[in-house]
Structure formats: C-alpha cells, structure tokens
Image (cartoon, rainbow, N blue to C red; front, side):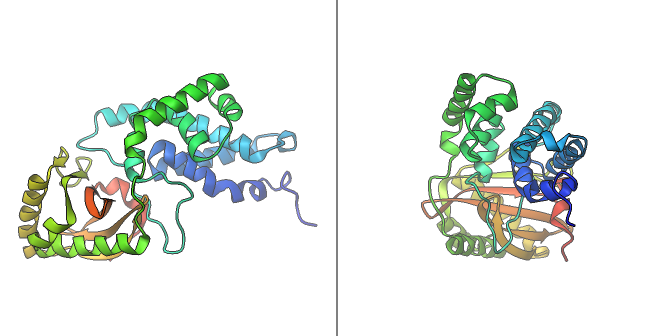
Length: 291
C-alpha cells in the first residue's frame, strides 16, 4: 500500500520544491541561501501536523517567505560592506526550460532597492499570483497595506521591467557576436553592438579582479574593452556555453587565471544596453566544474 502524503512528507513537499526555490531565490538573490531556506522549510514541514494543513502549497509558501524575510535582515547588513557592485548569483537556464516568470536580472537588482516587505508583496502577488489575503497572512499586514506595498514596489521598479522581448535564438546570436568581438579585439564590431548609454557591472566581491564601480557610457565601455583585448591577446578566454542567465542571453567562460565567469547581456532595441559580469567564485560554485 502506497503511503499517503501525510505519511510520507516528501511526497507532498518534493513537487513543490522547484517553485518554493524560485520564490526564495527571487527574494534573496542567492542560490545557496535559497536552498538553505527551502531545506529549513522541509524540516519544519516534518514537524508539522500535516493532516491539519488544508493547502500545503500555501502553507509552505508562507514558511519560505517568512524565513526569507528573516534572512534578508542579515543579508542586507552583509551587502552594505560588499566590495564593488553586487549582482545576484547567476542562474543558468537549461536548454529545454525557462523560468516561469519575467523577473530578469535587471529587475532582481531593482528589487534590492525595495524594503523586504515591498519585495515580498510584489513577488507574491505580481509574480507568483498570490491573492492579497494570503499575502497579508504571510507578512503580517492588512490586505490594504499589502496592496500599498505592492503598488509602491511597482512604481520603484517600473523602469527595470523588461521592455523589449528578445527571441531566444536572436539573443544568443548577439551574445556570440559580443564574445567574438570583445575577445578578438574587433572594436568596430563591438561598437556596432553597444547602445550609446551602455553600462557594465562587474561583481568580483573582492575575491576576483573586477571594477569596483559600474563602467558607464559608450566611450568608457569601449576603452575598457580595448584594455581587455590586450589581456586576451596574451591569454584568450575559453567559452563554455551560451545560455540564458537570469532571463538574459549570455555565456559562461573560463577567463585568464582560470577564473570562471558569467556574462549576461541586457538587449534593448537590438543593442546591448547593459553587461552583467559575475566573477566572485562564491557565487559560481553552483554552476559546477567546467574545463
């Protein structure tokens, strides 16, 4: 006789794990922290009277969100002393799947500027489709207050919402062209790919070489790549794969010094508007070993 979900807690929890992990990752911007939160939720699930839980998904969603809110308190203190730009840990989409929401990397960075409660209300309601009654129960506020939190969040992050849909194949073609031009020193081709107000964010976290401030503007970004082309002339970076990274086309490389790196490109109106580079080794462990 097969065990019922109440007898086998994993049978009820495991199908919900991917969605719970996405909620935690969207809140925290850290794959490792999200995994820890979801595992803690599972441990609490084990200690719950599961027969009394009428809606396991809603119950576990509340547990995960409350754990995330607690986690953000310490995470925000750590980020105040972070060296250089902070970027979320990159999540690389498998070839045959995509994320079930439109939260791209620029939007995740914008979410960082919200209060934890604004972030929770926006993600639960606008991204994951949770009603305000449940949002209120989850974060301990009245439904009307939750509506205001979500509304304020929308106002703050409106500019970061995706404005241009980039077909997957076209996005990866631009990523391949950018890799070839930037590594091969073809500045004429690179100029044709970049928007006039392009910006580069590089997250080394003080553990890998990276600019400690964003590089802004067409001329400054070209100057940066002229410098990098001299580095690549001596030791070329090695492409590992092209992929969508947090909703943006990009690639994974091994850079000079055997540094693993992800590069994601924000494309607007056919031009690269922003380049997001993660080099901090602590943020790349989940990608696995590459050779």
